[in-house]
Image 1 (cartoon, helix red, strand yellow):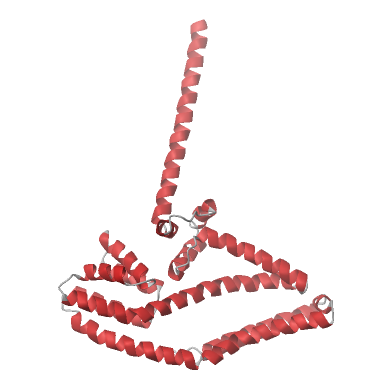
Image 2: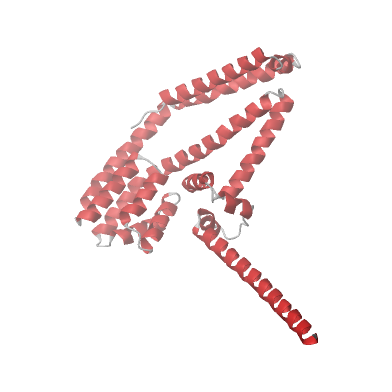
Length: 314
């Protein structure tokens, strides 16, 4: 009987040890897998680029990147070049929306709290699109120099993959970083067409599409690319000057598009300052809330229409 008790205790202890070992092995494997996913993700890439900066909200970032929203946000952040992970941007955006809600509710009226949060939500997406557009414009301005470097490298007898790596080292951000990503993908065996197609998806522009098409067709046909790149360099220089002139001519229209909503907000603040509590009384009735919603919709339509009229594709 004593032997049976000792045997039972021994088997129980062995099972406990095996269970603890199994849990530790599982936790270690899960942590290694999460670390591998982090290194392969955009968050891991920017962390490798800035090793001195600690990353926050890793748990939120890991869960967010498992969703469709997180993947879309990660793609947009990669296009903007911001030094933020999807988790960090998500937490900061939520904090900003909550702050806008409280400020609008306290300064204007309680009705304007959720309205300000919705406007802030639209503003975060607009901010990302603006950053992406600005980075794309900077990349477009570097395209003539990029085309010239590729032409010189291929004329010297270097392969196109080597020429792209050399251009990534010589050019500054954003062209340098974007070409470095392309070079890394080419180094692991990804086809040239796929690597360059991802670049055009991340930074869409007609000039980049023309350059990528020229490189892909020349690489696929096996012909010389020097003369095509020389002609493309001159064309890109001319388009660069044309875009600069158009942007200068339309600067006043662009300022007007942003000034119109600011005037509306100023009118609300002035009304509440002259007649304290007027916004509370106005938004306390259904007809007043409807009038506010209609006016905000009209301001939004005016902003969109002015921006559309000032957008000229070259």
